[in-house]
Amino acid sequence: AGLLLLLIAVFVPFAQDKVTLPEVAKTFVSIDGIIAIISGMGAAFMCGCGVNLLETNPQIAGGLVVGSILGVLLLKGIPIGPLAAAGMAAMLLKLISLWRK
Image (cartoon, rainbow, N blue to C red; front, top):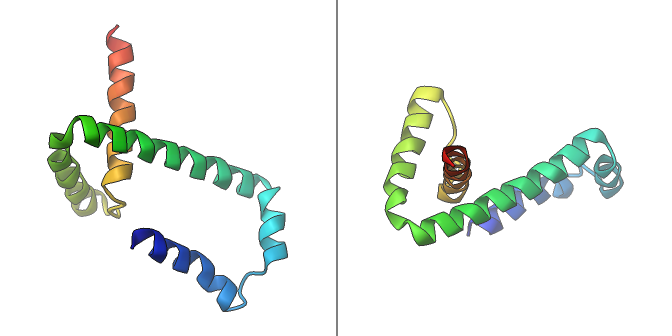
């Protein structure tokens, strides 16, 4: 369901004629577009790390939920989901383990 909603949100501007395909194609070769592509790749990788972390340490989900709630309440953030939060946690845990060696 989440992917379907994401696709709908992405394609609404096309349906409303606010964005054309040539404009999007031109964006891909701009600095903003290249950074967006790299960011998307990084986010997908990070979420993949989150899946692995949740598979090996499912008990961490409680901390992710509490952290998301605190981020919304204290930092005026937006809850983006457990996979992204778990991915960030996995990367931080990896950095800490490398630092301790």
